[in-house]
Each structure stands twice: as structure tokens, then as C-alpha cells.
Image (cartoon, rainbow, N blue to C red; front, top):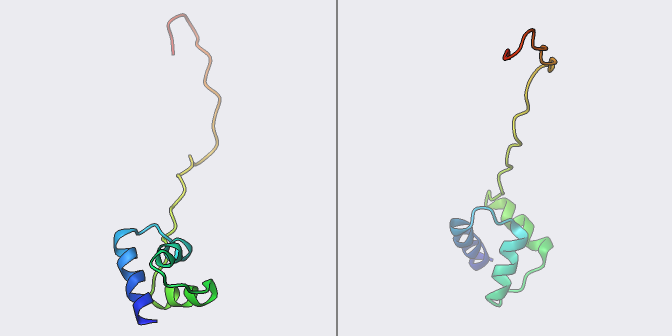
Length: 75
């Protein structure tokens, strides 16, 4: 268990956007087979999580139609 925690910390140090599933896949490549139901609590206990990205800010208020030009070359 200690080795798995250490491996997780090392991977997260390099790859911040990896969740527990991707980290598990990398750990399995090193011949440490672990069930995802055991892996997730370890991931959570270490305080690891992928931070949520914020969406784009939308314009506030109501759009008004553009006024018509009164004479030529007017905006």
C-alpha cells in the first residue's frame, strides 16, 4: 500500500490533470495490480483530485438591437 501511495504522489507531481483511473493505468504498467475500488480511497485519502475548470463567462444583461443609421455613413 505504501508503495502505491508513493507511486501516486510521483505521478501526480508530474501529471496534474490525471485522475485516479489514469494513474491506476500507469501504476498497472509497473506490475502493481490493484482493484479500482481499493485505488480510489487511496487517491482520496492522499488529498488528490483533479481541479475543476471554470466555464467561460457569459455576457450579462439583455442585448438591445442596433439602432438604424439616420443618414449615410452613420454608425
